[in-house]
Length: 325
Image (cartoon, rainbow, N blue to C red; front, side, top):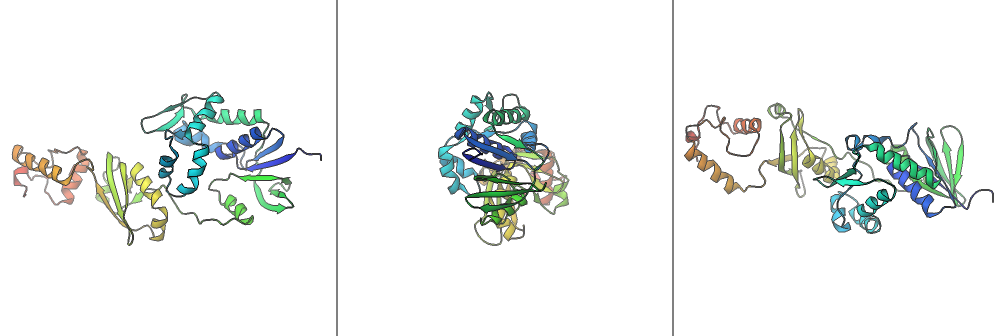
């Protein structure tokens, strides 16, 4: 037999493709591993991830807790995370000369704060493992043949292999390749998106942010979806971590309801309604001569306070003493 004992092909030159190719080559030094990337440069998304710093992993080291952060597929991932989880990722990069640091929100970045550190690490690890990287090699079709696979390239060439790894991410072409091999594909829907709210007065507050707000989204049926976290007001509606998480967990429900629902926002989730009433009552008593619009006793941005006053039909000149109970 002229070729090595095992020929493996990885389609997709992103982080997953590189990591899979390296793991394959390191696990079986006698295997011939080829990585095919459609573009001219691999790892392009790694370069721009995390604002060019590359958030490598997250400081959550319990598999049962980690899967709770995944809107879908948590049960399937639990087994995988018991075998390889963030601790293993940290250890792997340390063994390859890259140290990570943890930020306040749990995200972990290379200590250089430069995504090129991760790109160079993966590229060098692949080279040392003997992975052959072929760029500008778009795949147009894959067929199962004998006990392996035939891979047709856009260049007209055909490759054969014993083992095949599809690491094409969200690429529709990757979905088609998998479907052509007999896999059932779950129809993708948008996720991690912002909310469009038809309120021009809210749009005027673009740029205002609140560190912690509680969101409750009620669709036409089913239990409401809830998230707590930072919220950013934009010129089209709402964004920020809490909104993005809510859209991720409710991706399929929102799609099924044509992205229409009712959103409640609690801008002060750390305080109860009774506590807020108490603050307002004390303010009415102690600062009765001051205008409500200019004296805000609550930890809310000034522009948001004005907006809430307007939505409550409270005139700008109304004094605290004139506010009804």
